[in-house]
Every structure is written in structure tokens, then in C-alpha cells.
Length: 404
Ligand code: KDG
Ligand code: MG
Image (cartoon, rainbow, N blue to C red):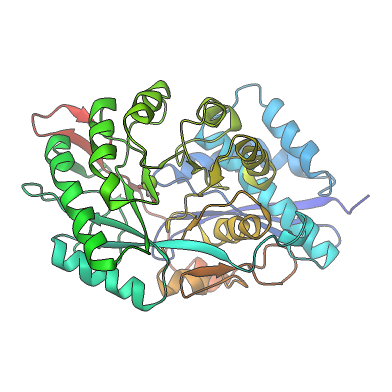
């Protein structure tokens, strides 16, 4: 029996951007860290952890990882959803961290050991106009990237998902109300093929190109776009339609061979099950923090493996370096792995969460520190207080609400 959990702390702060961090301590002095960040809903998860989960953890055996997962999932009665599953995810990450620290082994070793020499990753290249985008692609190519996500502006629109006027892209806007964007799906569907064609022409045939449609097309528009992008031979086209309309992907599948990736807004295996079992996607995008942690993500990836679907976890800067660590440890040890999204972080975020994992030349390494290999520099972590920030909302040009 392992020593008991005797301290549960929820740290809400904003080193450059908002993060929610869970820290567990055991009576024999071990620490476990978990990420609980849900962009724009941080305080909801913080309360769920502080008010409803933390008190239940005190006195429990941290070695009973699966039992605690089941206890927090089934014992809550009300289940699933981004807030609940991020809270459970943070606890799960922290418990695997404690187990690794106790065993003196990196988490990937506890998960069965390495299956690859490095974890392939992709970063974000964006540009308002095509020449600017091609310059951004060149930067990624120069650093050895083999996978690059490309996003551009759309003529006639002043804001588009994934494109910012400066180098760092943080979609959440500070303030009491979400920023609002206007979007024209039809103009986007007309323009995107020209962009991807220009990038493929510029970058050559070998680099893997990814593109994110970000939930806002109809099934027919998604099918049209997928077909129009076939000459550009994408590695994946992401979130072509709102992920809850799962039958829509069957229609899209019938019209295009462009590989499809969906799932960053999913938070349990039951959200993913239909798409995976019917092979309506090629990559499942759940993030370890949002999908119940390492224990549950492993089950999602195992189901995906049976049906020829690969993992392509969500990894923007709103997934903290702790969750990034957990994802990289899984990327090192899960066979059916596609690619890890790695948007990168501002330097201060790396400083707030000193980590053993590393990025270079387009690939990630988990490092061999015990556990997840992440520590906290509390002075940096708490140097900026949390302030409300919301992801944008979107409307069509006529004012109709649209998925952002
Ligand atoms: O907080 C929301 C972002 O994580 C999301 O918009 C980023 O779609 C995204 C991606 O693929 O990284
Ligand atoms: Mg996305």
C-alpha cells in the first residue's frame, strides 16, 4: 500500500495565459502534478476540483489509479463533459506522476516502454496572405519540421481562426465578454484550396500538411472542401463539421479521400466510439487533459487501434506543459500514434513549468525524469494573476450564430 494523499492544491494563475494546475502531495513527501485547463472555463474546473473532488482524495491510496478514476467518474452520478473530465484528467495525470516518482521511472516506461525513437509533432504556420504563410512554412521547414499545420486569412474577413497579426496566437480574449468574429464559410471553402495548393507547390511533395476547418462547415461544404483539397494531399483535414454531428462524417467520407481528424472537443471514449468503430475518421484528437487523463486516453487509443484509427492529440498552448508531458509519454509508448500537435509556448510558460520533455527539429522527446518530468516554479507560475478570458464567438455575415 502506498502512502496516503494528504494534500490537494488547485493553482489558478496566468503566466502569459490562464492555467489551472492540480498538485497532490503524499504523506511520504511525493508530489504529483496535473493540468486542468479548459480555455475560457478555468474557474469551473478549479471549483469542481476544490469543492467536489479534492476533499474526496484526502486519505486515499495514490497507487489505486484506476480505482480513483472509476470512483470520481461513476461516483459523481452526473458524468462526462469538459469540466468533469478535465478535473478527473488532472487527478489521473497527478497519480501517474506520483507512481513514476515513487518507482523512479518515467511514465512512458510504466505504460509499457518506448515503441518509437521520437514523437512526431506538428506546429502552426499561419499568414494572412499566401506569401506571408509561405514564409512561415519556410521557418518550420528550416527547423526540420516534417508535419506543418497551415492556416491563412480569407479575403473579405478581418479575423479568421488560427491566424494572428503577431507571432503568438492566443484565441482567448481577456474581458468580461467573449470577443466576436464574423465568418463567411462559403468564402472560406472557395479560398482554402488555393492556399493549400500554393503551400504544396512551395513546400514540395514530401512535407505533411495539415489544416483545421474548426467546426464551421455543413456536411456538403465539408465534402466539397475535402474533395477540392485532394490534389494537395493533406495529412489531415481537421474538424470539418461540428463533432457532435457524427453521421455527417459518413457523408463526407463518401465524397473524399482526404484524411479526417476530429475530437479535440470530445472528453470520453463514448464521444469517440461511433466515429472510431465506423472508421469515419483517420485520427482521434482528444487531449489528455480534456479526456479523463492518461488512464482514459489509453482506452480511447486502444479502441482506435482496433479500428485502424491513430492518435493525433490536441496540443495548443492552452494545454499546459504538464498535459503536454503526459501526451508525449503516451506518444512514446502507444503504437497507433499519428502526430502530436505542439503549438509551442512563450518562454515564460516554459519557465513556470520546468520540464524534462523537449522539442527539436519537429519531434518531441519525453525525457527520462521520473514521473511526468515536470516541476513548478511557483514564483513564475503565480507572477500574473488569473483574469477572465473567453474564446471568441462567431456569427455569419448576416449575424447568425456560427460555430467558432
Ligand atoms: O482553446 C481553443 C483552442 O485550443 C483551439 O481553438 C485550438 O483548434 C485548435 C487546435 O487545433 O489547436
Ligand atoms: Mg483544432
